[in-house]
Length: 239
Ligand SMILES: [Zn+2]
Image (tube, rainbow, N blue to C red):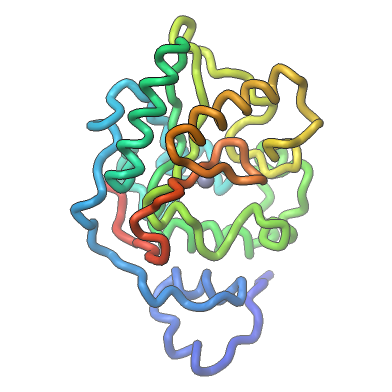
């Protein structure tokens, strides 16, 4: 089954790569500014926040697509320098409270987002539904905002993360796991316990104090408010 809508002919001749196809699926403008080189302003976050745990889910198969995602050829995390520096300040404050950062995703190539869109359009593939979207029909993932044709992650100043207890290594209980597409993952959800909500607020407080903006539908997702590339979607691979 295909969810690809009819497309104006002036767009058809611009369909030169999967990213363009994905963008057309949601009826949004094509990314005129996709860039495939890695600008010098991007840094490997492991060099800036060395004691974070990097659990790069789209490099492996433990993700909603169920396989390694296009553009991930290494389990690495790149962010713009201002975002990485702000995250280092988050990590330092977290450490004073006995907490560490578990990072799931940082910069995300546009070709990875295109892979998500192809997966979302394949309504027959529901292998990961029970684990990642038990409360939402796959055909509604786009409409309900869980998957988008473009991701802020491609601008290089957005990341997904959780907190862990440095003494035990155990993650703080946020009520839902990373990438569970459900209203239960909304930071303000009342479907989680007070303790779980307090843990979400602890993460949000740390991030907001150091310049990040939360996202209303994912407790794990934050964007640097003063991001250096607010309009540019990059497509260099993670290697
Ligand atoms: Zn995210």
